[in-house]
Length: 421
Image (spheres, rainbow, N blue to C red):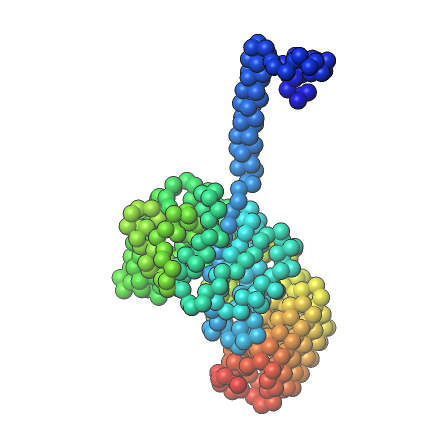
C-alpha cells in the first residue's frame, strides 16, 4: 500500500489518517496514470525480453529420433544392445545425434521406439544429466513406420510455442549441420524442410527432384531407370507442428505418403547436406561411415585423433586403452575404452569395442570386434567379420567373413563368410 501511495504523493501520515479512507479525484487520476505508465513499461520490457531471448537462441526446441525396432541388419551386435546403443567411434550411435541437437539449443529429445525402451532410458539417464537435456520415450505397441511414430508422440512434440521440431533417423551419421538447417527453414517459409545428399548411383534410391536454386521439392522418384537427379533423402527433417495434422496414428511412411503430399502443395523444401553422410545400419556401411567420420575429425578437430610412430592415417583411441610395442594401427580404426592391444598387432579399417583384448601379432582388417571379445595370438580376422559380445577367437585361427553370435569360442578357421551360432 505504501508503494502506490508514494507514487501519487501521499505521506505515511496520510495513510494513518482515519479520515483518508478515500482518495480525492485528483489523487485517483494520478494513480491511474502511474499504473498505466508502469503497465506499458512492463509490457515493453517483457516484449524486449522475449526478443532478446529469441536473439540469444533461448527458444524451446524439441526433436524426435526414429529409433525403430530390432536392428536385424547389425546382428549379432544388436543381440546385446539396441541398435542406437551400439558403439560408433567410441560412443553410442544415438549419442552423436543427441550431442548435435543439444549444441543448437534443443531441450528435449523424444525417442520413438518399439524395442527395449527401458534399456535405452536406463543407459541414457547419465547422459541426460551430463548434457542437460530431457530424454523421453514414445513406445509403439506395433511398428508404425516412419510417420506413425510422429502421430503417437504428438503430445510430446507440441507445446503451443509454434516452433518447428527436428526428426532424425537413428541410423544416420553426418556432420549434422542443424543450425544451418534452421536458417534454411526460416528463409523459405514452407511447412517442412528435409536434408538431401548427393550419391553416385541414384538408381538404387528414391530420388528427390528439386529446384536447385530455391530448394523447393517437386516430386520423389523411386529407383529411377532414367536419370532425374542425384539427390536422396538424408533422413534429417525440420517440420512445422502443422505437419502432425497430416499424419494418422497408423503404420505409414513419411517419405512415401506425407512428404509427396506436402511437395504437391509447394510447401516442402530440401537443403543439400554439406560434408559426409552415411546410413550405418549395416556392417559394410558402418565401416565406410567410420572412415568418413574420422576424415571429418581430421579436418575439424585433429586433436581428437591418435598420433605416434605406430599410427597410420586416421585413428581414434580411447584414453583408457593400452597399445603394445611394435603395433601398426590404421588407417580408419576405432579402439574403445579398456581395450588391450598387445605387441605386434596389425589393425586397419576396423572397430574394436569396449573391453576387447587382442593378443600378440594378431591381424584384424575390415571387421567389427564386439564388446569384451578376445582375439588370440597370430589370429587373422578379415573380410567383414563381425564378432558379437564376448567371443573368443583362439590362437592362429582365421576368420574370412564370419558372423559370430555372442559368447562363442572359435577353435577352427572360418574359411568363407558364414554365420556361427
